[in-house]
Amino acid sequence: MTRFALAVVAVLGGANWALADESVDFAHDVLPILRDRCATCHTGDARKGGLSMDTRAGLIKSEAVVPGKSDESELIYRVTSEDRLERMPPKGDPLTHNEIAVLRTWIEQGASWAEGVSIAGQAGKVSIKPRRPELPPSDHAHPIDRILDPYFAKHEVTAGPGISDAAFLRRVSLDVTGLLPTAEQLDAFAADATADRRERVINRLLGDRRAYADHWLTFWNDLLRNDYQGTGYIDGGRRQITAWLYQSLSENKPYDQFVRELIHPTDQSDGFIRGIKWRGNVNASQSPELQFAQNTSQVFLGVNMKCASCHDSFVDDWKLADAYGLAAITAERPLEMYRCDKPTGVTAVAKFPFPSLGEVDPAGSRDQRLEQFAKLLTDAENGRLTRTVVNRLWQRLMGRGIVHPVDVMSNEPWSADLLDYLAVHLADNGYDLKKTIELIVTSRAYQSQCAATIDGQDERQFVFHGPAARRMTAEQFVDAVWMLTGTAPAKPDAKVIFPDGSPVSIRASLVNADGLLRSLGRPNREQVVTTRPGELTTLQALELTNGRVLNDLVGRGAKNLRQQHPERSGEATIVWLYRNALSRSPTPDELATAQVLLGEPISEEGLADLLWAVLMLPEFQMIR
Image (cartoon, rainbow, N blue to C red):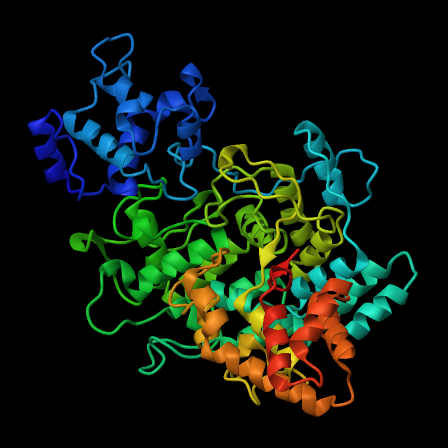
């Protein structure tokens, strides 16, 4: 709803305080009112009257806001009260008719709230410098479990039981290499009676340089918005970093060096900071220089500079000058600041967003400024760099970050000690990301059963109970289908060479996205993507049930299996499929049902139906 429309509505008064066909924008219309008029008394530790307005859930729980019913909302009653003892805010002028109209309309239209936003701004921002927490005494030797023991006790949480060896092997194989364990690998693991068999299988998976690089390429392609086709590649306005990235992952390049080579780049790695040169006229906030500011701050610092690239941010404390200060680091010429796409006449001055760590010399050449920025980002005193990446890894492996969302690192972590321990552990181990992954997956916390999802939980009141069940990524799903059906393409689309010169294995991370990959969540990577949607969409359901790509894979897979293993009986085929797809044998009921589906003798159509039925099982599509 425009401010003009709201003003007209407010003047009209009475029952005409809102227009049903108009809407308010939370960030631009509602958030400034709540921050300016309510935050002092009702955020953080200041919860006067027992009311916390830090989150939407807190407002709803207290009935200060009843979505869709402004007349039943305590907030509206208080800001419109004529009683000076009840009216809010208690000091200063009352809210204007226009401000009340905004709040009424917002509530009537569902009281939407941008994820991860707190009206307290960055008041609770984590310190930029590293902190080394003291490990508490515990019966557990593992540092993660030592930290979690008192956490669980404080929150009256009973740690979940451990998972079986087969469930562990499936989970860790998918998490570390993106691949399902084979039936042969399951048998070998089950036959291993040594006490450290889980640690050794973790080391084997992490030591598989090719499978590790193939899998984690997806993670970093999303973060660094690297792809093999799409906007900008045809006219040279965008450049791949695939070869550099693949080699960096395969050789496990230290993370600080990895970051420095992206910020102060080589010829192979400059595609990330050069961004996309869009065709035609675009908003000033989408210039390559502003893309640099947005992408580097989001990926490496967990800072959202997108709003501040157009004007002073409404969702946090970052200013237009902060975004342009970062942008000026990479600018080839003086960079004029634009506010809401209008020139200000002010030239941006290159600066680092956390000046306590040091400054970038505005008078230096572009190359010198980038080198200085790279050094500041990877400085040993920059705990934000390590906190941000270990938080991303924790989210990837456990289903939810220690700080949530992962791009709002100023939010309070549910365990500051755990976050800080992981961050200093990474630095202590030479910025070896595999060491961080190993630390997480060797913990009892990781190897416990998935915790139940608690719907509607207040984010500020989140309590960690254990790992969350996660859907396979699009690439994991397609890799699994290819493995089961023998239908992987003949060659990759990505131009990569494995360090020893041997042919690259074909994985879904190395091919252009088709309809199946796109429907399952693979982004076009024109923007940084740090978290893919986790819920099944209508488009995905349609693609999985009626899509041409999956139907073709299943049909060809059935033909391949019949041709390659004509000797297999129906029962043997079913057992093979269940063990390779689900890491378990079928139950008697499942076996009987599958045999009916297969037919006797086995038909390709029946085998295709069985393949599809197994692929559609939530048990197959979930990592848990």
